[in-house]
Amino acid sequence: MGPAASVEVSVVLPAYNEEDSIEETVQRTLTALDGFLTGGYEVIVAEDGCDDDTPDIATRLAAEDSRIRHVHSDERLGRGGALERAFEAAHGDVLVYFDTDLATDLKHLEELVERIRSGEYDVATGSRWLPGRVADRPAKRGVPSRGYNSLVRLLLHSELRDHQCGFKAFSRDAFDHLSTQVEDAHWFWDTEMLVRAQREGFRVAEFPVDWTPKGDTKVDLVRDVFGMGSQVLRTWWQLSVQPRVTRRVTLTAGGVLTLLALVLMTQYIDFGAVVTEMRQADPALVIGGALIYVLSWPLRGLRYRDILAEQGYRTSVGFLTGAVFISQTGNLVFPARAGDAVRAYVVKMRRGIPYPSGFASLAVERVFDLLTITLLAGIVLIGYTVTGQTAELARAVTGAEGAGRVAVAVATAVGIGAVVAVAAIIASARSGTRFVRGAVYRFSTDSYAERVIEVLEQFVGDVQRVAGTRAGFSRIGLTSVLIWTLDVVTAVFVLRAFEPGMGLVTLVSVGFFAVSVGNLAKVLPLSPGGVGLYEGAFTLLVVGLTGVGYPLALGAAVLDHAVKNIVTVIGGVASMLALNVSLTTAVDQGPDGGDVEVDVVQDD
Image 1 (cartoon, rainbow, N blue to C red):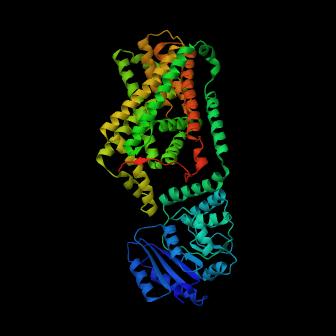
Image 2: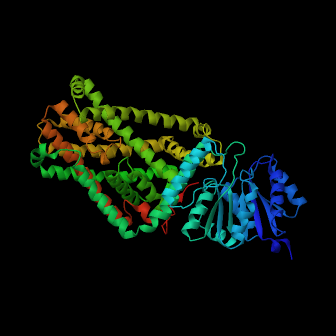
Image 3: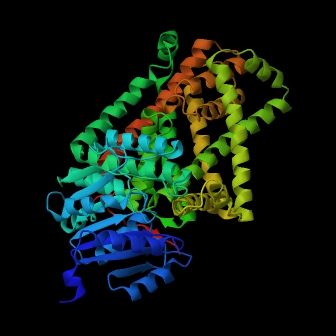
């Protein structure tokens, strides 16, 4: 009978750059196993892309003792990836692992193995937080550990006290079942295995162990904050949210949230003071303004297609127009422009465009929007300067109070920021400097930091690729000018519907300036859809530059914004039905995407 057939217990030692301790750890492990097993075991060094002498030492140990095996990886798989690879190669039915620093006292090894070997449990784990354990945890380890375990217990409904203790065992059946579900390949692997084991009904034993910290922790800021935290949220989404949501629920929620957008519009403005003026508005001009605004939406889809094309992705204008409609409708409902995340999800799930590229395309679109409306406002401001009207403008701004003055101040800051952002993007694109890597390395050089760097560099690279080419910049810039010109013309039609008694030149110049500043003001996500800030800036400038009455100016501002939001909502609802998604598409299909159509074509 070969050695594989006689192996009952497989002990895996995950090793990354452990040249100073791996040989002693292996020998102490063999001694501990000999103390309660009469053969029938193997010790596997799961060497994970080491760049020191650990591979050579492991190879030598395996050659000297048939009970020792060496599983090598040329590249770093991560802690979870290395363990899974070793367990898959293991011969035993009882699968054990513990950290090579032997922080957990090996006197508990027999108890760990027998919990599984006896058939009483499917999973067993040591705990540093149960009564009866001895664990000298310094504050820099103990406080984060308690916080992390409390978060896992709260969000993932785990009954365990310690999820990250590196002292665990699985039955072969439990491992084979759980490993197909666990997605993380690094430090969260332990937690996800335990959480999913409980959810799947496996018998899990947690028992106290004596634990002593050895050396410095390998936990770091980037991995913990961005890695473990995001994985907890991802698992919570998959286990607690996604199973409870059906297509009917998501479509209903999308409809309710869309209606909520219209209701919210009435909460930021007192309509009582302007109802009379709004009743006097010429409905034909208002409808004409709405139709003009509708024309801007295919241009938005065309611009978004061009942005994605610069990134190397090809898809149709019709689909992208619908995606923009859905995301903008979401921005009317959710604060902090959360609707943008819906668009990134839609293009990811329906066209296979990665999240970093999707968010990068949104960032480029937003920068071009800000740059364009800043440019339009600047042109009008130059016109006021040439015609000697800057004094009136200054009095209008400095004499304003409340939301109007705040809105103009916000618009000024945002406009300056847009110009600086564009300059920085173009400069970084031409310099080719890898500033992301340098910035992240200030906090961490861990392997998880490399994953963070890959995502951020893809994002920054996509932004630079669009802004760094003259043809792409010019084409997307021209489309942006057309989009915002139609937006302004819509406002001019609505303002003209109130018969403000001003000449066409004045009407157009005031319209361009008021709309531009109003849109800059609503960039900060202080309210869904920017309701309130837009009206404040628009009203302030119209009153200050033309002398028309406050009720008329506010009525025009409210009606202009309402017309645009209503068109957006109608287009958003139609797009949700056409694309069979909703504002809660992410809930409907989940992070895995489900059965989705992927027809993206990416350039080399």
